Length: 317
Length: 265
Image 1 (tube, chains in turn green, orange):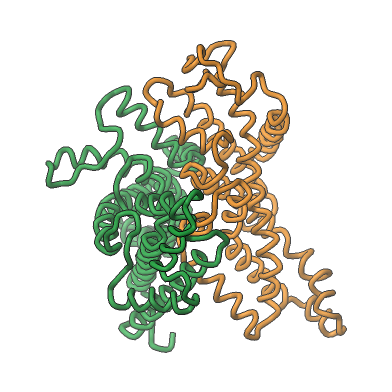
Image 2 (tube, rainbow over the protein chains, first blue to last red; image 1 turned 30 degrees about the vertical axis):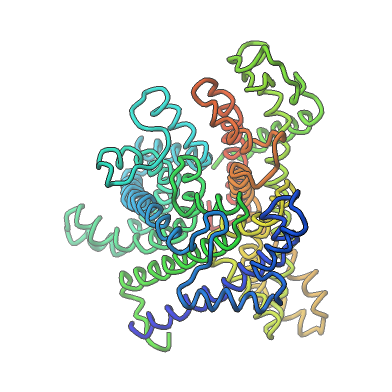
């Protein structure tokens, strides 16, 4: 197992290294003059020339890439152009806020999605199952940014229960912190809960039809024990794979939701960097996000291996 | 899912409305009417008017083709890019095929929206670029699927027989592989359109798609946020239309899967 983990960690390093090439390549090779993009189309030629020198744009591409990469290896993520600060601390602050948002949402998706899926499977064909099926169909068809508009309209504008947008740090009071997080976490989670519960239901139904469940029932085990000790663990394996896929969708959701709810996290920062043509900040933010995603995928694979006794990774596997 | 034909009917209606809406709307979608700003929905303006007094129904109609264009256009891009590359990697087991496969795997290891953001970040946004960006995001998925299908078919007896007859690779491709590979590819396309519309509208919402005054629905929803308290219908109308479109496309996609994929009853 240790050898497997080490090998997979090396794989993550390889993906991140390749991603640096990809990000740098797309940002620098796509048509569009970087200096003009930063300064605007009415920039004077001398200002453009000065900025090009400052950014090292006259160096050959491989040299520019090397400067960026060696900075990264020394822990220097580059300099944000609009904020005139190193990108590293800016991104670190933003990642913290995004992690809170995504963490709560992901926990809600895991518990709610799997719980509802199991419930629908054990009540297959009954009203609860039909209601969930219809809800899933609708929830998958509603884009998360439109959800955001709907819940802001209902819970903030009409009922006035919760603040519409913004972020309140926990140091300014626990109540305000929670009340600012409720709506964005809900919106982030709701679509993914529909997705996870739907696929968990299918996996659980398959497990319930299996011979080992028949055997467990024939042994006279209690229905609860059959459900949670025999059927559910086997249905968990596909659920973990789905959760890993949904983590990518969650990252997409975070970008959109942070923009709608004005939460200064990594997603909002990326959109800000794009709007203000802050390319160093954009490159660094993208790289951090990709690294997080690669590590999350690794975590999912390890959880899968740990839960599935049929998979015992060896060095040769 | 027994809603395939109702789904087809509803989708045809939407497409028809989008085509007609491009030229013919109750009011000029760009026509300002200062005295009619923020008018609530009435018989004359079923979806109300916006901050410039523009008729929201006319705007929604004139923007309908953009969501369809992005969804189906991106699907087409991923099809045209992914299927040939998938066949190539199935046939070419040398360094060329491996290289293409590794690049596809790398793109798959990025979160979808990130790739879209990356492509749209540097150049000025436009509808065409959104279509291409969303399509590029889905090329690796289409490539992987085509490759898997083609590799399975390559082991089949009728392909082996064609090889034994000494037929060329091109002939095997065109006459043995493709006719048998299309059902799973069509199913994937059907389901992919829903995701493409979702991703496209999200990118538009973030300002990386069609630019105002285009009345793409994601753009309209983004613009409506400022006036949510005083005139919620400006955002609700395009949002509900988007939901109806997504549910409809999803019904058709799931129906296609039920028909063409024997493993899903």
